[in-house]
Each structure stands twice: as C-alpha cells, then as structure tokens.
Length: 112
Ligand SMILES: [Zn+2]
Image 1: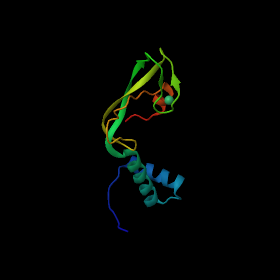
Image 2: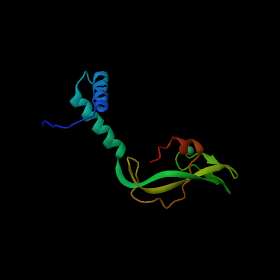
Image 3: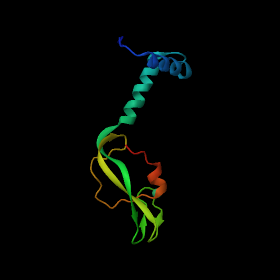
Image 4: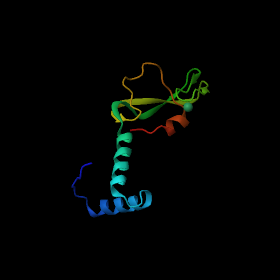
C-alpha cells in the first residue's frame, strides 16, 4: 500500500463522495480503485475498432456476421468501418472475410 497525494476540483470531490457513499460505504480508496478498473476495461487495448457503418443493399443472400441470421437480396445490412483505436473489442488485424452486420447487431455494437 502506498499513500498518494493528488488534487481534485470541487466537482470531482463531490462526485467521489457520492459514489463512495452509494457503493462503497464511504470508502474513497475502494471507489477510486473501482473507477480505475472500469476505465481500464473500457479503454481496452490497441487494435482495429469499428468506428461506424455504411449501409449495403444485398445483391444476394447474406448472413449477419454477428448473429448469423440470413437476409435476402434487397435487404439492407451494414458494413463496418475499421480504424486504429483502443477498445476491449479491438481486433489485432482487419478481418479479411466479408463482414456485414444486421441493423440490430450494428445498433448494439458500441462504436469507438
Ligand atoms: Zn445480426
């Protein structure tokens, strides 16, 4: 254990106090630790992340890459746009297979 000394503005102090009271019986150290762990898990690792989608009208049957449901010619699916970034879902390589997501999966996926 190590004692740290740092400065927070008034808003951050009152946020810390209310979170500590609500979730950790007023223990600010445990609250800061939980906040850091949450930040680390959301920031994730560097790689390729989906930053958006472009709509594609199917010219033949295709299945959603994520849920596997099949869609027919004329239906609209969404092709992901990859960019470098950090995320828990970041991929080490841009996928080479064709990747189309259905509207439901595209909406549920958190974009970076
Ligand atoms: Zn889907």
